[in-house]
Image 1 (spheres, rainbow, N blue to C red):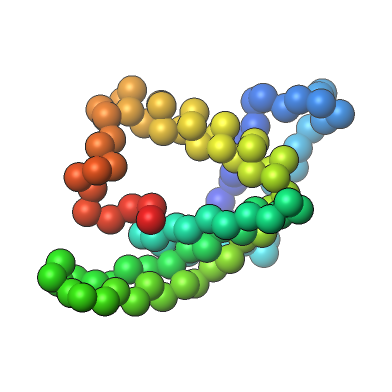
Image 2: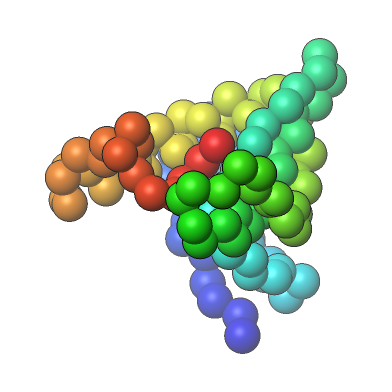
Length: 107
């Protein structure tokens, strides 16, 4: 099922004034409750997966990695700014997120 992605209102640099067309014909959706990020000078690697440890007292937890996204450091910085804005808007609507007490989330 294709869904329309929102238009990006803040476009800077060489793309100013350019119309963006989002092609979601090849898009897939995944769910992850764990994310890990590593980097080199040339790329940032985002690893997504599922923590299926239902018992808190476990000595070892296996995270099943499902997706790896590789982006440039420039794209990572733009993503960081976008995520910061999304979280701020979320907290404005629904209240603060306390990640120290959250049951899942980013690792």
